Length: 117
Image 1 (tube, rainbow, N blue to C red):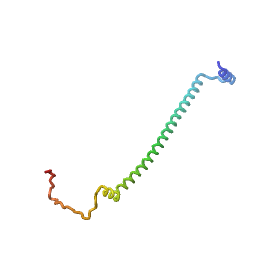
Image 2 (cartoon, rainbow, N blue to C red):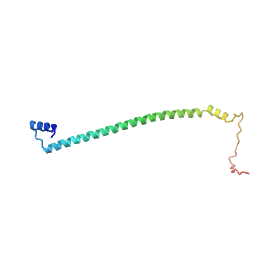
Image 3 (cartoon, rainbow, N blue to C red):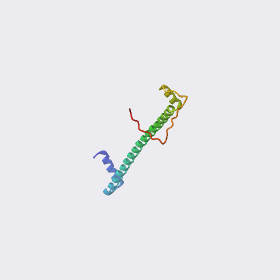
């Protein structure tokens, strides 16, 4: 027997506790149940913390993507403006015209498919 076991046995005998085996098993079951409940609570808390951190990361990524989207929309709007399109057309060799010729097509005439010569 160890010193602690002797001391605990002496303390129990001195107080006059009669520890019944059923009561001891009930107490042990209660302690084991509370330990299981504490472990479950810790696991649940840990999982909640992990999911909270992941949510923060996803919100940060979403914010970054929203900013990037706004930047791309701005670039598209600048590139599709009339002045930008005119500059690109002039750079490609197109020129403005002073007269526009409209060709009238008879709606009763059915166009024939093009046949190469």
